[in-house]
Amino acid sequence: MFRYLSFMTHRMTHRLASETDLDRGLAHLVKADPRLAQVLAVAGRPPLRRRPAGFPGLVATMIGQQLSTASANAIWSRLAAAYDPFAPEALRRARIARLKQVGLSEGKIRALKLLATALATGALDLDALATMDADEAHRALVGLHGIGPWTADSYLLFCLGHADAWPAGDLALREALRLAFALAERPSVKAMVPLAEPWRPWRGVAALLLWSYYRAVKRRDPTLIQSPTHA
Image 1: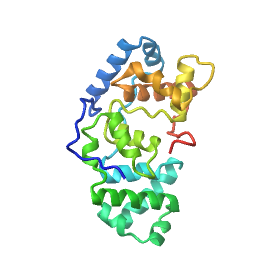
Image 2: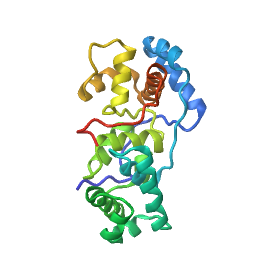
Image 3: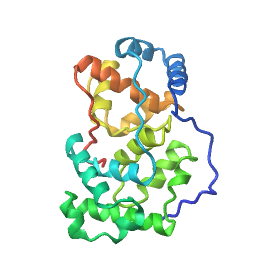
Image 4: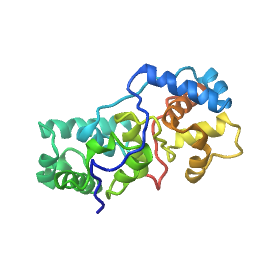
């Protein structure tokens, strides 16, 4: 297992900590790619979406993999109530039978216990993720078994506010790009990376904008749904 320590060299990155940060990102994007001005005109200003960071935030994001929002929230509520205070050591020592009772599958139990062990041993440093650029932080997270690209990107964008996080595997985001740029077909997960390259270092803001565009055009909320191979 790789070790990711806080003394690693990090490149400068932007954070989405306030509405001002969001406006800075939008201004950069419209200047860098004039096509996004029309997207913004249709979508309107996207909301700044933030969730709690740290161990609880990452666990909640992992629980949300391939589940409806309602189901994920219910399981997370039961888990947090069962282990109060909610900490890595409590989860690491938790009995599998009890974790199943709150609604966790065997696969997620394994992944969450691996996460708790990685934090206990220092193999993963959640505090260090906040100082890395989005790509480096992404690699740190997916280096742990049970955390896939979708989970990593969702945590980085919504919990840590990484302005350059790019959830390339999200189905609604891929569909929004197809609609916004009149593409013949929905871009593949692989193709999403070069498509967003001109939007660095604000790809996360582009994602928020495109989700809002999806909502405006489809008239429904773009629930985060990962591609089947991108947990």
